[in-house]
Each structure stands twice: as structure tokens, then as C-alpha cells.
Image (cartoon, rainbow, N blue to C red; front, side):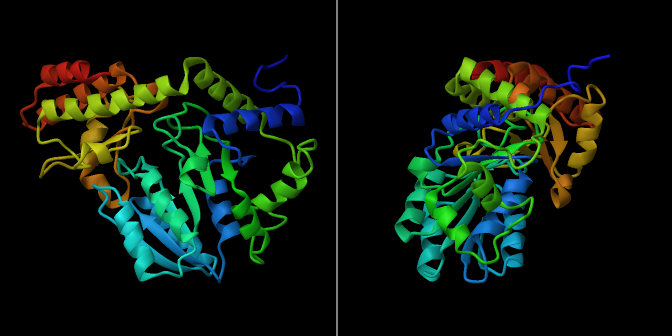
Length: 366
């Protein structure tokens, strides 16, 4: 008995390379793009361990939990790390990055998250990229959440290592990811004696065995289901149009923010300024006396598929995330999520205006 998910024809090197080319077009980049056979943490860690070492001085920008993780990896590599941490309710600025370079002119590597789905902020990469280019540092960017929700342009921004994943705004699979690599980044890795080799983390192995070989022979058996899902995901974006997909995410963010303010009940946007709020997810601060994780649990009893989650770690007490990305970047999903939160807040004796929230969603949907 055949099964469409199990009895698949082998994925050829030609088709694998064609999918890489489509991802490169999505990023509008002339850099090498390597599709990695794992969730985005694989290229995120592999890129840092490949490009950083004991001689590296890294500026690690922290606007959420992933920035903290990158700092740990950099220290593990033996790099000297300068942390630039900003409150999670805001974004980092180009001036703050410029000041860090002025104080530490030896910085030669910058790590940064574009959009932090975990905290709901997004950073001005184009402006920061100008500063990084002026200083000649290598620029490493986590664009896993932002790709598909807002512009991601490695070439004009001067990003040397740009990591993306398909599982958020792209609406694709979680088990496969990609990284664009500049010539400068390849050179940095080649000169790094500590760069992973003969390892699943090794980008250099992929370069030597795949990219430099003309992409004719795959280094190992590809993850077929994930690769086919990625192909379908990119094809869907190409068909609809990337601008249309990004506009849908921008509408979802604007509608969620406006709807939450209209809902009341003490909910407030966690990211103070709308221009610093990520289009991939909206974070909300709960009123005093309310535990965010408990509120989300109650809201999800009405529909466990709603795109709601409490903040991670210590943020579980004060933050709610409305994850309006991918298939949930719709006005229906936003209205349903706010309605469920309104019901849960009302049960706690707080005054809410669910009808007003729904009207605000409709009025602010682009």
C-alpha cells in the first residue's frame, strides 16, 4: 500500500539546487544560499561557530531571548563579546550601534535579530547595516521571523550571514532552513581554525562538497518532506506575491494593536511604539493582578488553535503573544484571538468591549 508521504521518489540534486535558487530570489540576493537540513537553530549556530573564534570581538545586540543565546554561542567560541542590551519593549537604534563601535573600535562581528517574535519588536536593519559597513565588521542577522512579514534584503543592507526559516511568516515547514553567505563570510570561516569541519554544523562542508562542486552531488540524503514543503511554500509566495504576503502581516499587526487597545480590560501593547512593533507577532502587557499564562490558558479553552501564547520564561507572568503569522495573518484569526482574550478578562471581573475590538480590527485591516 503506497502512501503519499512515505513512498516518495528520491529528491535529485537538480531539484534541491532549484529550491535553493528560489530561496535566493526570495531574498533578492546574489550571495550563495545554503539550505540546511534542520530547524533554523542549525544555521544560526553553525554560522556563528564558523565565523567567530578567539580572535573575534563581537557586538551582540540583545532585544530578546535569541540575542542572549547568540552571546552564549559567541563566548563558547572564545570570542570577546560586547553585549548591547535594550529593553524588550523597544528596538535598538543605529546610533546605539555606532556608540558601541566608538567605545569598542576593535569590534569585527555584529550579531542581531531582525524581528523578535518572542518580544514583538523589530529592528531597523537598513540603518544599522550602514553603520556596520562603515566599520567593516561582519554582519550576522537572524531573519527567521521577519522573512515574509517585512523586507529582508541581505545585499543592500550589507548582511554577510542571513539566516531564515520557513515556519513563521512564510507559512512553511519548521524542519528546514537556509542561510545566505557573502564572500567575506566564506573567507572568515575559511581562515578560522575553530570553524566546524566534518560536522552537521559545518557550512564549510556544504560549500566544499556542494556549492563549490557545482551542486551536482548532495552530501547526504535530503529531508524530502521538508524540502518539498519548502518548495511549495516558496511557490505559494511567488504566486501570491511577496508584497501581498508582507502587506497581510502588516495589516494583522495594525489590526491587533488597535483591537487590543479598543478591547480594554487593562491590556496594553508591550512594545511602546507602533513603528518598533514587529509585523509577525503582537505582544501585549496584562494588567496588574492578572497572570498572562493563566489568561492565555483560559482563552485557549474556547479554541486551542488560536494563535495565542504567553511570553517565555519570566515574561509568562506579564506578556501575551498574538502570533499572527503565516496562515494566522488574517482578520478572522485576529478577531477570534481578541474575542477569546476579552472573554477571559471579563471572567476576571474586568470591563472589556469585545464588539469595539472587533470593529477596530475591521477598521485597521489594510
